[in-house]
Amino acid sequence: FHKSDNPITYPPPLHARSNRPPSHRTCRRTSRGHCHRSTQSMADDGADDRYQVLQRLSEPENAVLGMAAGAIEAVATQPLTYTKNARQQGMPFTLNPKLLYRGVTISAFNDGSLTGLQFLLAGFFQK
Image (cartoon, rainbow, N blue to C red; front, side, top):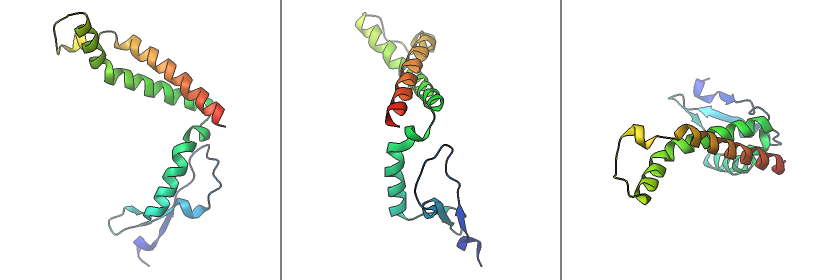
């Protein structure tokens, strides 16, 4: 008996409604301790999970996930948005963070609430 021969079984994710057999959730540990799964089962899991993620989450979880995604997107794209608007108004180019991130709080709130609502509705209608 070698520890790499020991199959490790992971529990299904919370709120999972999967009809897959347990073999899809097992892996074998390699000599370095990494989980080894065949390419076929990983491709199957990825294809199934990609379209069922919002279905497995509850409505509040979908809303929180959407709000977080929207807020992160707003913070990441704020410098580009500021630069675009400054150029349209003929203002000089700057790398000053105080100017680049001006208005990011309101932008993150706005994008977060809209994306949260979109995630909530998408998950609701996919069930």
